[in-house]
Length: 184
Image (cartoon, rainbow, N blue to C red):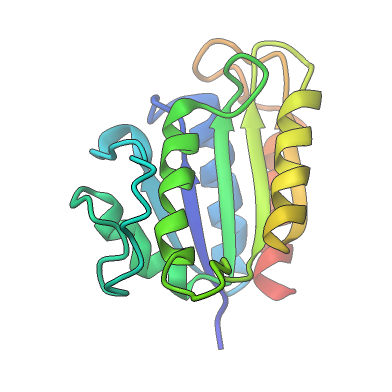
């Protein structure tokens, strides 16, 4: 049975460097036999979590808010692997990605113990600079708190302008990681 991979692309640029990493990863994953679903968060209407603790009453609609998260919830539940893709903003992930990820808590609210579904995960990031320590810290701690397994990270620094990642080894790394993630 093919692995199901969900990509949460937290870049606001469809043709940006993060999106290039996503495309490379997805190509490798598909070559490895995975079913890949990408959500380009920059084109979706996703409201921030209200912290209302009102979710979890209806597994078909885990959150009380009705927005584009309704598209993500079923794919997230079915996914074996969740890819977090983001440009680095102020030494962490973008607000687009963080907002969508926060809203996944409604799925945990469907469990009496607030347990998140156990997944494997990948981190893809592009940045102007070369310092990813804070973003990696957030991701590594998130994996620990959720009980998820990280399959790897591809961090591409020094890529500010859209397209600056062309020809960089990180694209090949993302593609190889996608293929490996599909087969693990």
